[in-house]
Length: 539
Image 1: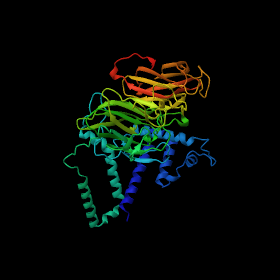
Image 2: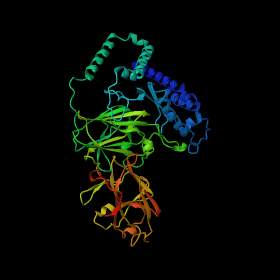
Image 3: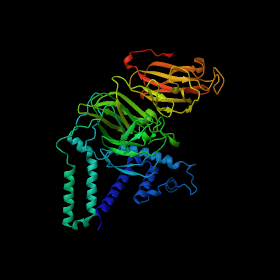
């Protein structure tokens, strides 16, 4: 006599096979026999218990007819077609497959398909709270959906459960002869579970997070107590409803020194309800889309994942596309000031899909300054430090390209010489995330290689470069030895700078003669200083 687990497994495979056939019979795949054959091959290997045999070589020879001497380093056929398959699957589930109960997902860098139960056409986990309703106007709050609409949204998921039950019953006629005692035991166990999970009449008040500590969550991760380069301690995922926790294969993430922030994510249809003490906060949201890489096809992932972020009913990010915002495999941090919990003591954070599944890698909520973003101070060093004036400088971050190096010759000047112990040099940029507003930018330089008794010798003209902010020139033909003597600090200040459309101050250091160089960067909100003309000056 078959066991209940065996029958459930058979029923589950039959549902998965039905999900595959729905994709293969679709209009999206009807004109793509090559991709259909690839998908069918991958899924059939899983159904046959041969998932371990799904390798690039086997796919190339079995599906695409490559010879036994196939060399994957010379022939990228499998990687190219897998990239196309992932895009076609995303297209199918975003259009004619919106109401499918099961979604076939193939993670980037992997070949084994996963079958994910969906609710309202999105892959999700069960949750106690209803999913967020569709996004409406900028000024409108969330409104409760009619009950009939909620049932309509959940119909595919419940149809899947009904179908699973019918298949299990049809396949398990032997269960008719199960003893009455066994049935009674199961019924008593079910009643016990029902009593255990039943909600209580009284709702406990939220446990507010102290304002001094803030909140740092590694979304989708069970890891707690991890410390970043700035010394901040991060906790495991918490306060969420719905969605899926996904571990991401380790790979380089650009513009961050803290890759661990992006090793997991919460994705799907989800929200956060974070308890906070009354007060004003600054929120940092961390994103990195690692699903779509240009690869050999030179095809990115723009428009494949588009969603909105809503806080307490207010839209903070509308039609947000991570890859369009920052690029593939690139850390994208968005900053928001003047964040407050609702009157119920919670910060309500909703992620609403437009195309593809939303995702979030990390959430940081720290005490805020009314009307201002907290200052950003970066030194080109591996660790944060506090200078003689008691000001804390963060470790190097947000850069792309260039090299960091330690300089043995200290700089002269009124500032703490440790600020100039290191430099980043080359042809590089920084994308510093800021909230909406106007900012004062301070750049710290010191020529510790060229001129005088420095190792490089030479003099004026040995190092010349330009500095741009959001593609507008701040410094042209900048020559530190023209500005000051070797090993002497040079401080340039610029006012009234605004973030670009991606919420960044994009600082580009472009070499003209030899390499550009920088020792430290400061960004301060000028909201409390009124309007200022853009200018630069020495301190």
